[in-house]
Length: 52
View 1 (tube, rainbow, N blue to C red):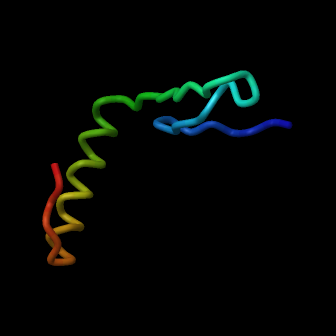
View 2 (spheres, rainbow, N blue to C red; view 1 turned 90 degrees about the vertical axis):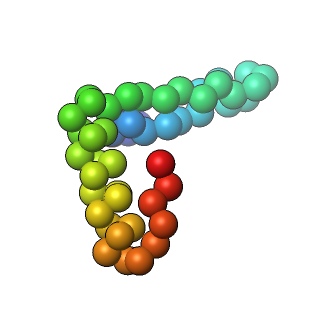
């Protein structure tokens, strides 16, 4: 089974072999900054608080 993995995706490994381990994949800093800006602007547009 071929599963596509996206940057920043969190997945569990080790299922069935004791305690699963969380694996976090990072994204490039420029994408993280762009997402943070989008998240902040969207919160303001919706009249919600910005959680930083």
